[in-house]
Amino acid sequence: MPNGIRPVLLLLLCLFLLIFPALGHAIRRQTRQAAIAFALQAALIGGCWATARIAGITTAIFLAILVALPVWCLQTYAAWHLSAGHPVGLLPALRIVWTRGHDIRYLGALFFLTAFLDLYIIVANPEYALAVFCAKPGGVFGILAKAQSPILHTLIGYGFMRLRRWSILLYMVYAGFGLLNALANYACFGYGRVRTAFLLTLVGFTVYVIWRRHCFKD
Image 1 (cartoon, rainbow, N blue to C red):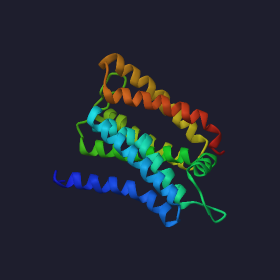
Image 2 (tube, rainbow, N blue to C red):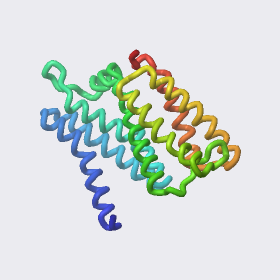
Image 3 (cartoon, one colour):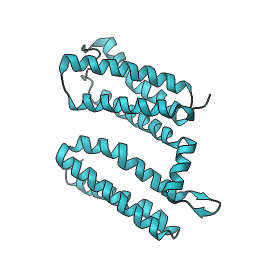
Image 4 (tube, helix red, strand yellow):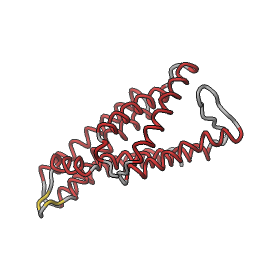
């Protein structure tokens, strides 16, 4: 993609993220909610932009996925959802999301996204070797080591989207392996920004999934 097109696409994306939830509220004649949605999304986009300037684009994308995108989804859901013919605000929409386990489904969608990105990295960089307990296996074992990531992410994503209880066990196995592997790689290779972000995110996700385990069905 030409470098001149990227800023234009980024600007269009920011405008879409700003206008879309506010437009939904405005169509339903919720002027106050539309103003709140616009201001909140503008603040989040500004925070991501400032993070990109200070800590780099990778950190900004990470912040956008964990904070800005869920808030945008909530605002869009609030603009769309109707309860007995009356518009639903952010707080009532958040209660519905919490009750119906849509937050777990959002995590499942993130796992699907991660599976796609993992597969893209594997296909685009055949020479890429995944570090497994300080070793970077090659050949068949190297292919299997890399393939397990998108496969597990897809299965966990499906289970979370469907709120299946078996996906908790699968996730805990994945989290335990990931935690031990990250600590071992820390001991061998030392500090790394991506490694640190993965470790902290894994711990946070695991605590959250255990806390929300009652959302999953038999």
